[in-house]
Length: 588
Image (cartoon, rainbow, N blue to C red):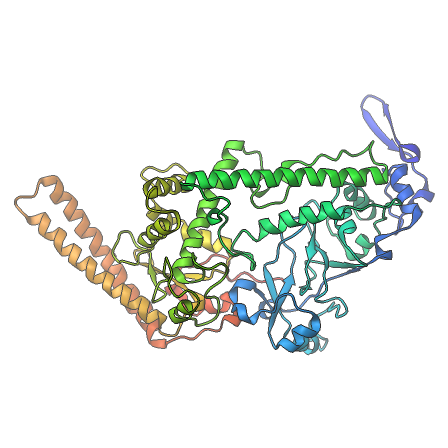
């Protein structure tokens, strides 16, 4: 390794000594003491053709008050968000919200687009509102670069660096710094997501902070390289993967329902989809290894690096090795991926129940504040699986109502995948969801025990479906916040009262069974237990109605989606299922 080669000697134990020239350090921008660098790397720095010569690297904006200025995109009305706009178009649109690159998990190439920022009237409020100290609250506005296409990365990572395409129409935060390059940015995306950058980046800054200035100091190879086709293909795979899940604003429909994957049974459809995912994952691996090889050769790093990419480094959500990580077996990973895919199917079905989606039209249907069934029917006049008419879906322990969530899912399954294999399809879903191997586990068990927690996790503690729930969970009803109206709680109250009446009738029936001379002693014992259980449930529901739901219904509370879930959810107090962490302080 030339001047900086490690010389090893043994004196009772191994010790390592590095000899490096101080002059070599000066060849690296900032003169870091990177004593382990090879001659090839030092030579790259010495030639002095840096990223900063061709790209502007910029620190992202800090709003100073994210709780006010930043939302998850799904919290607000979709028509209030301006997508794919230039800065001038954004200003003229009179819209409030715009896409905001805001950090996120380790993911290369494309994605982590969860947030929006208030840039109404060309960000007038952010540009002028003062902090208590008298200075402008927001910093690093970077007005010359907002809304322009580029590349962005998460500023502070727990490990590997990853850079992603930043499409037109975005602002970017201090959690997601950005760079803007002359012409095609493929070269820079390929370099910064390659193994070569791991060594180059550590030479500049060995910490976990990827500062814009440090990215600008990365040297470019001195040979002409064209990786545009490779990077275009990789990015297309990554974008397709990101948009396959409902957390993407470009989500259109469930991949399981796509004609390319449809087979006679749900199991066979999943197997076809899984094969497609595997093919995409392996193609990504091949392309990333080719990208690595090109940059390893360009920097002369063949003796230090190999182009191989582990499956866990292929950052596709459909790749279980990346999604779940750890030392799990292939069998465990496949079971987890299948379970999550069935959870996504259930989530999409619930979205169809509430009118957010439709089996008959791609993309979002009802996604604006206060929209009604009439708005739904205007878009989907003859739905094969209609949305719920009153925006309240009971989640109970039996089929007490015709629109009970379990009954409605069964209807969805029949419509979406046909009647012929309905029983096999339902069994396949239940078996997949029962990842803990519980006895007699059913779809209803999932809805009662895990569905809402999964929903809250999927939407990062900013759920769009809200669960009205009595203290012990004997009564539950789901609503869609975009369809909420001031009388919605009154509709939930009517369901509660109807449910109580049904339970009173059932309690009386069980009491009759317990005293009927023709009833066996075992049946009498069971009936008495049911009477006692139902009495406790009725007491719980009476308290919930008297102390919580009825007073809330009389208030006729209004919400404003622009205020966000955090503000609106709390207005309903103990009427809604508690979300742990909802009140956590946000970073500014």
